[in-house]
Length: 421
Ligand code: AMP
Ligand code: MG
Image (cartoon, rainbow, N blue to C red; front, top):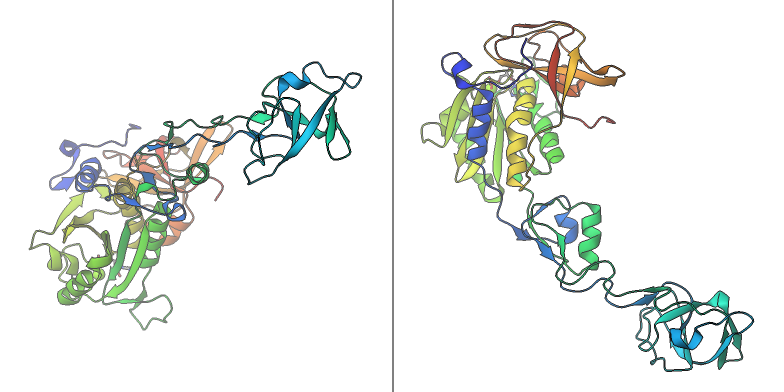
């Protein structure tokens, strides 16, 4: 078999669009959200929209690294316990305050760790090397070279240095750096607010008990989780009946607070395919058959200028669609440069059968063994059961053109959980 999951239109059976092309079409229709100034706690996890440049030196003032005396190095040069130097105590340099004065020749100022070094002094003699005589005189037993125990101004950052370059995601260290440098509202791409809705006359909320034939809405919760994990802010719009008017009304009522929409169900060819009926004819959303399994029918377009993802109804198809289309698109909206999941090449422990004409995303549990990565399928062929996803940590990509990937075959696997989860 070929280990390459990449497929092209000319390989696809009639009417099917390759996964690569379908994803590219989606990404071509997505722009990063316009940047905003956000408070640091809100900006956490967001990507910077400009180089953030230091407007000050850091630290902003020279400070003492020890408790002791701030003096002139020339006044204590050569001092030893046998030959100490006597200096006059001229005050105190406290943390958080301007020093009480300057240090002249023959003078010493008491100083605490972190306190600004007074003008005139260029070295700190630690308290261990000082003997105080009354209130006014100190004998210093050491003569360190200039700069000793002084944390110089600008040691960390120089005015004009780039603190955080454009395109970087703000993590914990960046927040700390920006805070100390006084950039309290960095310019970032905000998190998209994504409206989540489930279509279907058979659906009820997970809090209710189904009558015969009813199904608890699985997709809204799953889409919520996927969006959160991607960094977006999901907005739950709930269940919408298979009724064109209701769907359009719900979508438009949420439009004002939405950066994008994700719905599930109602995109195939049945008479109840409400998403298609609501948005296709006006050219808002395009419906595509993608050469993938699961997840063949996909709708994507723009409603009122906001990206709209019309995912299929089956929960496993929804999960795969989230990974293949929605997650990369949301990351692009957030200004992220790298849109893919980590991938490994793994050895299948069991055979996987798939539809020849489509790229199959098989749910697998991958683990690292001494001889390399191995992948065990979590469900039988074509299984459309959500528990196969819950047990998996990867999607093995069985390329188009392969109907059987035998045990022992090497396959590419996209990892959708951190290994420690
Ligand atoms: P549809 O594309 O709307 O015909 O849905 C395909 C299949 O997925 C049907 O069996 C639906 O009952 C099921 N389905 C659709 N939406 C959901 C949902 N939100 N939660 C669970 N199953 C769903
Ligand atoms: Mg439906």
